[in-house]
Image (cartoon, rainbow, N blue to C red; front, side, top):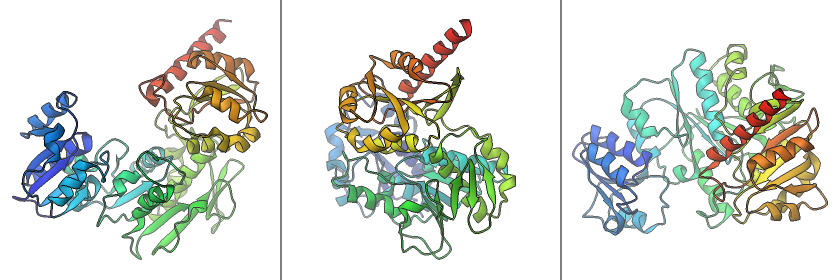
Length: 446
């Protein structure tokens, strides 16, 4: 892709937009950057783009393209139906996203991972596994490191492991991964999509350009169907997958091999599925399972994702603060093999916890509800799960500790966003971690 002298517009002042602008400049493009946010709120971004020698046009002025462009690169956080996106699409010969842009300028093969939940853990795990075998791999994309920044670095990689959101997939054109991984699917981002079908269609774009040489790895229950190339299905909840889970081990149906998962640091059946995806990647590269066993079983998942915090009095405390939707809560509950005392709740964003009444009744012995939606959860689960309310996370942890019995799990999996009480799920998870630490200190002093 020759960018020399081409006029390129970059939409979005976040990390993806900044990286795309820097990459375009490095290839000789004439770059202009735009963001419809106010200059006051974007002051740090204005300074960052200025360091590149670029002016970031902000606010209402950003909605009126100055002339035509050879190419516009849009950041994933900007809705393609927004006024700024529509204006620049009309003013450009081509309109693509940052993932597509970096893919055209990069040369390393891509392992692409999408799904409603589990993407970050799986991408991090695959990259760690490949690096442990001597291959050079990096996890990028929605995980936080822009793909464009990886390409700009000039470093040589054997594999790029990309976490891809539906927003990023909306604007691909030629993007073709060597390995495409579909972890799961459940309704989400209904503030961006008019229907669940629209969200599903965006995710499905991952497979548009696959070839007979491509590999698709997918959850058995989420078979995209009708794809070229080789396909591997996995499931922790059915023995019909090529890879399936039973009694702490992952089994390979075709060969009879097994991988002991229960000794690892990852917790729950949903994480067993993440490991299955990684093992399928290892198989595709001719890497023996025994050569990745140590890397997988010592892997530390990113924080706040069914993260083991402590065992106190025979009770395991898990921090799943990243659970910001009902599907992630459901996955966390289905992944537990011991009775659960659940701490759930947070911002009321219109979710119907009644959808989880059945699984909660089967897995949760008691629940402690927090946040704006606490009363709604208790009402939805009345008669199925005994629920109590707590004013904050420390109080919830103390109350759950009094309810839990040795051999059980206290699972902090809110199932909704945190913005009623915290700046984000990270701060919420840190509060849980601190509350458990205080409990451990009190237990040790007793």
